[in-house]
Length: 120
Image 1 (cartoon, rainbow, N blue to C red):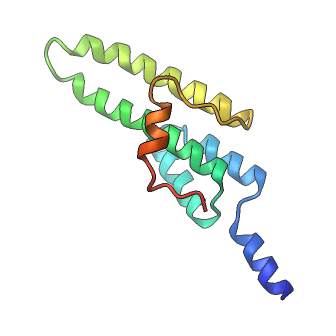
Image 2 (image 1 turned 180 degrees about the vertical axis):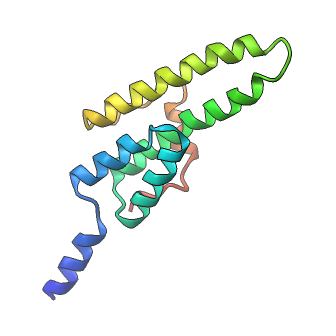
């Protein structure tokens, strides 16, 4: 029976592993992919929360990069790119403090719409 307990605890992330997933998820899209794979091995609600928040921010950055090619919209794209960087910094700071603060403007959207990121 103690083997089952050890196997179950090995499948869930420790607090430091969850924090690592949360922090890595904010390092551009490649970092998010790495964090997502790490999260699949050892899921946690804290890691899932920040994966959702970071995915929303990265999605905003991705869409903004395409707006840069449209005439008359490219200057707005530059402003949104600055907002993307600010969101990433805010999210990484919250993850480092082990807080669950939603990102401004996109946080509630990310939490309710990216349910493909499972907590456990």
